[in-house]
Length: 259
Image (cartoon, rainbow, N blue to C red):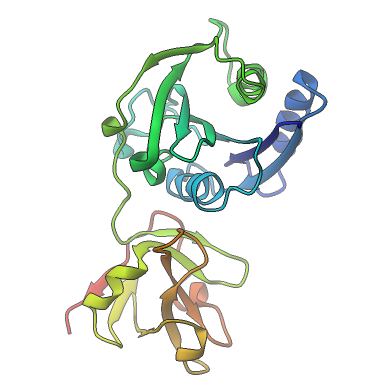
């Protein structure tokens, strides 16, 4: 069976950079299949969220490898210093799915506790500005085909920052806001708490599903991502939750207000 590579990157929704990287991956092995997902520029939160969803919570291909290149220019891995680029790393999750991703910011945070192998990938000395096109594809395809010769020193998953609390992770095309808040934690709040994003403060209805929220109201319910304890999602019946909260972006904070 041919390898299936899912590429997550912050090039831009319709940026030709995706085409260039896909071409290089196919050049390395014409039998592989490649799918792409775009995240906002430099958003390691959105990247980490989708790495977890595709590799951990909904991996439907036996030959799947998730490849990510959201690489803010930093050598550090701490979120507040993610601005210069980091090491390309190999992860194997508990379910056996391999991930190749840059160790920067929150890229690896959403799978941190489910990593069984975590290694640096050794790269050629020559680099360049467009590493994900000119340098990374050779290693990605080698690993997708089971060639592990490029794997270098092991790292501890404990060096990866934990998932950010109460944070926007993704805004979908309907204006629904996916968050880093687990559905199981919603029990600590009242049925109609007040919360703020982007200085916009709204009252929301906590429910088990869309049917628990009246037309025209904001709801906070278990979403479609996150596995058995899904991440909670804000939505507006008959409208856009994103518009109601002034169009938040991944990484924006969610604040619950005192009752």
